[in-house]
Each structure stands twice: as C-alpha cells, then as structure tokens.
Length: 238
Ligand SMILES: C[S@@+](CC[C@H](N)C(=O)[O-])C[C@H]1O[C@@H](n2cnc3c(N)ncnc32)[C@H](O)[C@@H]1O
Image (cartoon, rainbow, N blue to C red; front, side, top):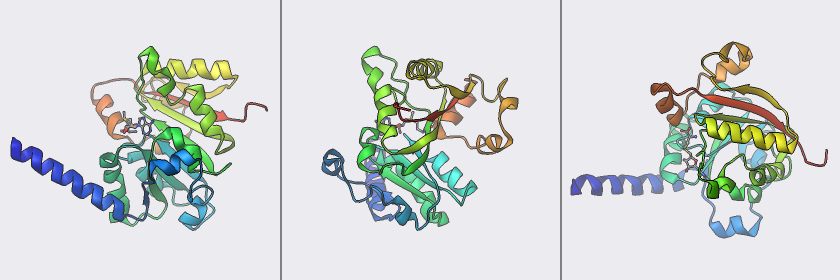
C-alpha cells in the first residue's frame, strides 16, 4: 500500500514536470493573476497563429470537451481552464501526442480570467459539469453567479454564447434564476438533454453533444438526466 502511494506521488510529479514542458500549457504565477495584467492578455490569436474564434472551457478537468471540439472544429481555437494540474495534464498530453494546434490549457483560477484575456477576445464559453456549490455560503463560487457573469463580460464579445451542461438540477435552476434577474433570456433549456429534449437540438449541436466529459460519463452511467442551458451574454448597459 505504502509503495503504491509512493508510485502515485512520483507519477504526479512526473506529470507536473511534463506539463511545464508543453508550449500549449500556461501556468502563470498567482502574482500575475493578482496584478490584473499578463502577457497572454490580448495575445491569444497570435499564440494560435490565426484569427479564428476562441472558445473557453471553464473548469475543464481532463479537457475532453476542449480536445474533442478542437479535433471537430479545426477552424476554431479552444482553451481549457482549470486549477488542477493533474487533470489538465490528461488533455494536454493528448494535444501533444496528436499534434493538435488549435487547443491550449491555462492552469489558473477562473476568478482571475480577466487578467489573461483582453476585451472581446473570447467568442464562446462552455461550463461543463461545474461544481454546483450547493451550500448557501458557497453561492458566490457557482460559475453562473452574477459576479462570474461580470468577469466573463470583461473579455467576451458582445452576445457571446455561454453553454452550461450539468448533472445538477439545482445548478440549472439557480442559473435560470440568475438569468431572469439579469434580464437574460435563455435560448435553449433542457432538463433531459439525451431524452425528451434531444429532438429540439440543431443538427450541428447534436454533433458536438456526442462529446462526453469525464464527469458526464460517470453521471450517464448512473442514469442521471443532463441539463443544458444556452444563452447570450451582453453588456449590462445594452
Ligand atoms: C466537477 S469537475 C468537472 C470537470 C470536467 N469539466 C468534466 O466534466 O469532467 C469541476 C472542475 O472545475 C474545476 N474548478 C472548480 N472551480 C474552479 C475555479 N474557481 N477555478 C478553476 N477551476 C475550478 C475543478 O478543479 C474541477 O476540475
């Protein structure tokens, strides 16, 4: 047992070291995040070497969506964001092995995203199976809390599409409540995406909905219905 723990720790250290060697993985120090400015801000298109639209997956975990979408849409760019290096390593390794040129990862807390993206630099956001943070005192940590929507507004194009996929009916209902209070109308609401709601999806959406994240697969095995909410995010003063 002791030996297994040592092996796992060694493995994790090796993954962390490899993560640092990847050019498509950014792990900025917290001081940069706190300063509000970084070398990455406004420079993502030159990083990718094209002017294609940028999609962020926030709380990407192992990055199944980031990697899967990058394969599916070579004329768009995808950036997975998560604070956990061990999880990001999985997606980053695949990107390296397959030579995928339109995917990158940023290891950072989502609260600091405005330090890493310039005004209107991002076209779309995916929130995939975000922690529902059900305790009342954790409300401000829900990724659809108004404080997060205000952070996203700082770097998305006006009217950017925001997609939320979640197993949590609690988080879905909370998100819809926030949108109502913000005067934002959801374009698509599903509480059983792969069941009753499937036929309402556009053919294009059905294509990328084939992608399943690590957490999504676990919930589907248990038969948990998946919620999907899509809305456009504009500036408040519109
Ligand atoms: C439940 S997991 C989902 C992971 C992945 N999207 C999936 O569906 O398999 C939530 C992820 O969000 C990340 N996360 C939660 N809050 C975060 C924050 N404030 N900043 C960065 N990452 C965060 C966690 O580290 C975790 O990997």
